[in-house]
Length: 263
Image: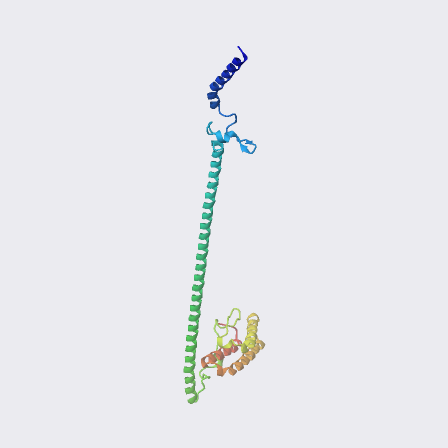
């Protein structure tokens, strides 16, 4: 065989080998691993463009695209949960605000009710005081008219001829027989009688612990008469009944100081 024939024969054989190996190469796919992207001088590897044709793994293949979808779904889920959490927090805040407003309203209503009740109580007390003052004033006017008639008849409204000073006594509620404590009437509770009240209480406490003596009885009588003189100075400022009751109380102290304290 000459040289030309040999070259022709070798070329035919090579062509037949390539034709018979084609289906095998296409089934085997490219010589690059799937889901792998290589940078060739600024470009992407052939698997990026031909991966789908050879069974996936390229730029739009299952590996990269599937991973992207999974991450996106997680991000969207996280965003949704955050929105739910914000909504719940807003609802809780609004409920707390509503409860606070309700409490403030109840407190305001309670305050107004208390103020109203207090004003009503004050008004009621004022009406009671006015009624008492009116009754006292009417009693004073009636007594003043009675006193005027007694004076016109020649009698003194402050002297009871049937009453004897020696017969005045104090009961156990006025003078405690066990302790010697004196319960003073309202008409003798003025500041002008303070010194006499203290002195007589001291003398009666001493009498209760040591017994009555002539010296102690004299001191009680002297101090009680001083108190009676102070009472006379208040005669124009007192109702006749109050004056007579106060005078009788002082006289009772004098008489009780002369004997043992009995009920």
